[in-house]
Length: 222
Image (cartoon, rainbow, N blue to C red; front, side, top):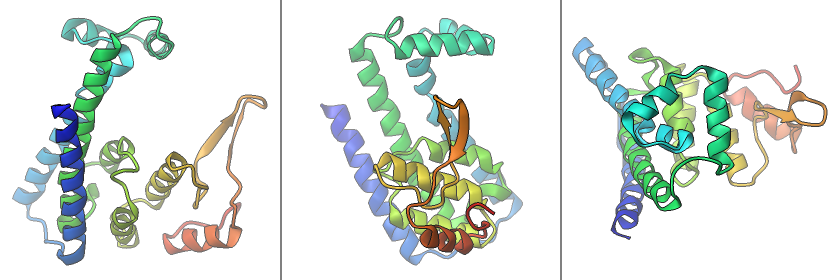
């Protein structure tokens, strides 16, 4: 219970921190020293982002066994992940619950740090590869990635600091998580019947095209 309350507190403080930063920060020019420091900070976030995820996905906490599973060939690794998902192998439920809470706390702490960096220094494409930052964001839940956060990211897209497709894909993933229709319709969905992937059709083509135009994407279907 104490751990759950701690995680909830971190999430609450994260949101308050972001709202404050988004309202009254001015992006700072990066020196080489500052760029290197930020790169180190983002790389530390990447470690925290994966700290418990591999344990949960591969159903193992022993460091030696976990490393062996991580280094296995892709088919073996995917078989293991499927077996863990189907509860054929893996960890006791109490252990999984504890690891999930620990990872949630890491994600919330990462959100606080990353949102502060973005608000003050811009999206970190110019001091660490953008896709790595995207990995951190892709694991964030809708609890953290609210409309105000996306407004801040949208400014970064329009300033050329973040890829439009990365932003659109992240936004639509959160929409799906909230059981809402996708806005940008850039995510491929696999149809098990046809065995093909396709984009969703917009619920409002005008709204989708307007949103796409605002971040520099082509009209839907073009």
